[in-house]
Length: 183
Image (cartoon, rainbow, N blue to C red; front, side, top):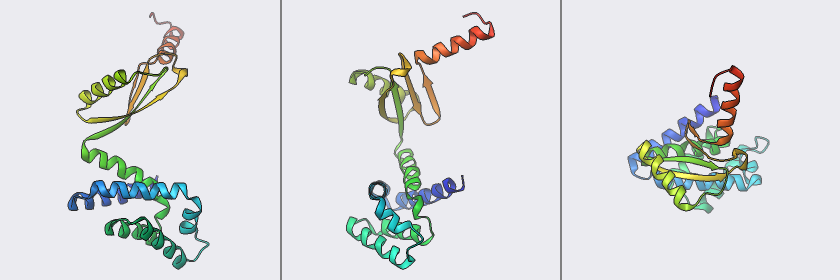
């Protein structure tokens, strides 16, 4: 829990700087790219984060990588600050929080849509439009399939879950029958 709080603080701080200098979207791309690089290159992350190596050597590796990927001066300072404060290991969590905060700043919500069968692009667009109208924000949908739903769809927007799956309806009917309620 403490790590999430720390990551959220760093993400908010970077977003505030991005809002002030109008570079929030650039920082989003740079941070996401750097976090992705660390995910792909496990040995590189190990070389930067492993406390068994000397701090000066790890920092030199980080500085060399920053120079190679060619990020903005602010992002370079941010990444070095994370390293100096011993928070570089949180880069993925910081990135996740930053992406969410940057989406909020743009008025965008990310949602997931899970269906039992493949949905047509027209159906997905209708659902996206409806969700957008209901929330008043632009929706980016991540569409997935789960045959275990039997039928229907389940949509998730943040903490809100809209479950119209047949599986859930059957489970609710079972609970009602067990309690002796009429359907």
